[in-house]
Length: 319
Length: 319
Image 1 (cartoon, rainbow over the protein chains, first blue to last red):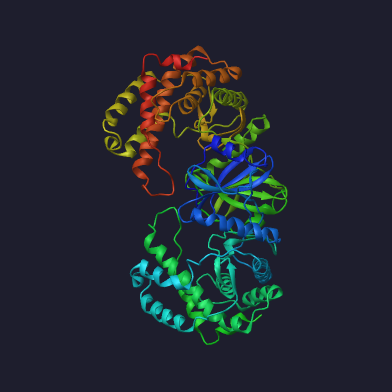
Image 2: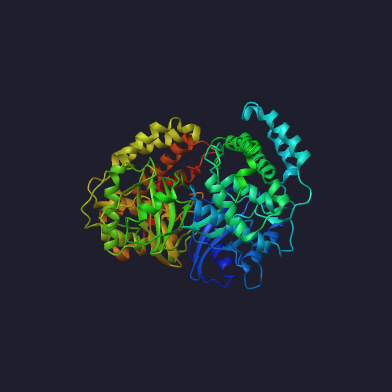
């Protein structure tokens, strides 16, 4: 949850006046996105999200996100595009922060997706990958596999988080370094498509949101992140084969993965599990227990890592 | 800000299905109300606030609030009435909490009201007092003047909050006890009508919200709370006579205070200042600095108390 920065009503009225979206009717801080301050803004012209970018999103990255989301929206993907003002500007300043007024999308995030909903999410991911293929932008994946050792080092004593974690992580680093594939199809990916970041109504995807980790990486890695976050029990110990198959079938409706990508999926899913295991461990250590942001338990991603290390892991990706 | 409790999408769909308000389109936690978990709920039938009541609001008080807000809404006051389901029930259960689905009201809370806006707020308070006079319900004011000593004692060392505060408070208790009026016109009042709790569009009041301190007390005390919260500089040191006159003029359009009430206003405003000084001091001491809730500085209400103690205080209430 968030809303770190307040917005003065007069400043808000002046900001909205730059756009062709009418006048302000309501503006309520919403508890969404741990990285930014978000407001649900209602004007006489409709509903919007007003996002003020806090320290985790760099202002220099904003043009990339504006372009990416504009491209995807133009291609018919249900993403929250930034609105441009009458001068064509999408990036504004308010309360001392860079800020954007963004399309509002209906839908709610699921906590317990059904197979039909996993299939829809997989298809939405595939459709997004088809749409992004023609996007010319690029961004280094600062949360990509080359950066995970740095996260581990910045965390400090991994064994204090989960006893024995340091040895597991060291072994996994060595294995991933030795086996990481060199040239799979790559383009800008979402890289964080957890159920929280998909809005649905019934079995229909109405929004793919929170692209602030989007960066250039293997598209199959995006599939692996989505697989790891949609198809497991809450403790991460069990992968539900029915959900997994539905997810992969939905994706396959839009994208035919290459043989090399299919072969790499268990490895990429080990990498994805390690990524979230490490960032959660890092935040666990560095976030006070009573801070504004809820700390997420890293242990379920250690369990996923173990599941993807098992000899039968490839079967979890059957479509 | 708040949102302490999560709502499962399936539970939400089942809750909404009890009402004639269509199906869920969106539900976002909003950063409003420090006492409860609030969500902005959009359905095919409109927009609503979903409130889950946390520990500070007693479930046994909810029927009082439902009846009060229903009465005021029926009388044409812009208050957020609780919606009743097809069985006539307004109080529900979800996520282990008592919960209500409530009318959504447009408007935003002002931080720097103008005289015209103060006049509108005063008139809205007066109109609410006219409407509530026929309300048969009653509720003891657990934040009323008989309870302030208890708040002071529960705070502990007042001098640790502001040096010298204990002596100021003790002297004020003695003076208020000796002079507190005995029989002014009383009915249910809002008791917390700070600018945060008034929604406006331009100079028009579109909502009086957050009635969870509403209780039976002197109506002139409600005027005093509103005066203290709308007409002072941020540090509480100066009362803006233009804002104050506008507020009192707006109120006088709806309600003619008795001579006894007018005479009591400076005393009641001293009481109101003491009330918020003490509750803020209490929360200052008992809220961790990095907790979810922002602590509010008590000092501006000590400054208001001093201003209302001055010999010319009666003139601040001239209409």
